[in-house]
Image 1 (cartoon, one colour):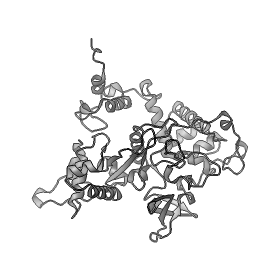
Image 2 (image 1 turned 90 degrees about the vertical axis):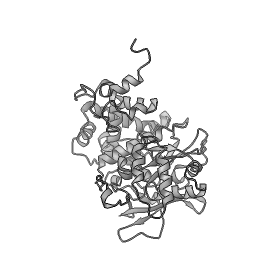
Image 3 (image 1 turned 180 degrees about the vertical axis):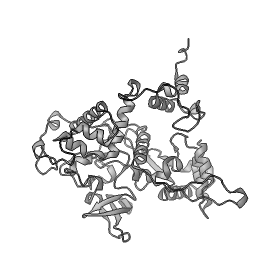
Image 4 (image 1 turned 60 degrees about the vertical axis):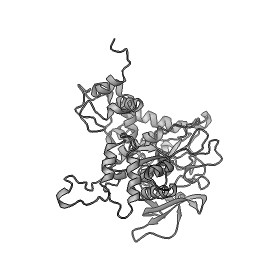
Length: 434
């Protein structure tokens, strides 16, 4: 149970639909406090709420459509869909990355709440951190033998919008014009169909549907090779490949011909640079740049970086990385490209084409991997944290004390035993003190 989630749901207002609040409250009574999510079947929620399963399903769909929930669709090793994980949005994740609080009930004047939530601006750093958390949550579901993830965020959910550039509410470019995605679907009736969206160019939503392969991510338009930047969306290379990186025959990352039934030829909603790589042949890794592929040789480079800047200097300018971290980051990204058979050309132009969010995310991964060694150029922690950075409770954190050991281990790996001696003591072997 998440006390924080349950207390917040109690204050929400759903007007004349009390059943919807009951479903959300029962879910909050089930989710864990760390991720605010849990894998639970609709019929279980229906039984707890004393309503028909169809009613519970309708309420869950409405809660997802209105942004209270995001659904993580999960698959087993054979590619068969299993129980989905439901994540509740609230102040802990800036209301799904929107920064806009949900409507709350109004109490009588004598009993009015002293605390209230107000809208706040969501920064690029906020979005990068939320994206990291959603990635970690999806990765916990595991991977297929070929390295592909076994979970993805459902289309239209707020989690999908956070991690996918063409998600609902995001800005895209179509026919040279910027527009906002107001609706998206991979269905035509009850049948699967190529992923498509409806757009708003600033004068109201259009009625026409546009294929995602006709859209472009506005954050990568300014870079010279548009193909190059699609690595930041987790798109697998193909030839020829549509501009948006989505194959019409594989809407929303599902390819029925794949051995396990889940083949992301398009970026899965939760997928990012940290997703496991496919193995490619040595011949593909050594393949030269092709004319017209969007890649350029070093002699043809047209860098948007400052003149004379090396790849490491670009990383250090755009992030707070040290020189050692920048070199490690570049090595990782170049290795990622080689494994996928993607020609790089000039490293400086290639690195400069990445979005700040992706560089920041990968840098965070490198720092977490190197945490036991300490970060070069920074001072080591000299003592325990005053409060738990995850739950904002004084140490010893009472919430962490009841976490599953695997979850506690993840936090210990993240912060280290010096900052979190309570977790280190809890997870120490039984005979460690003898």
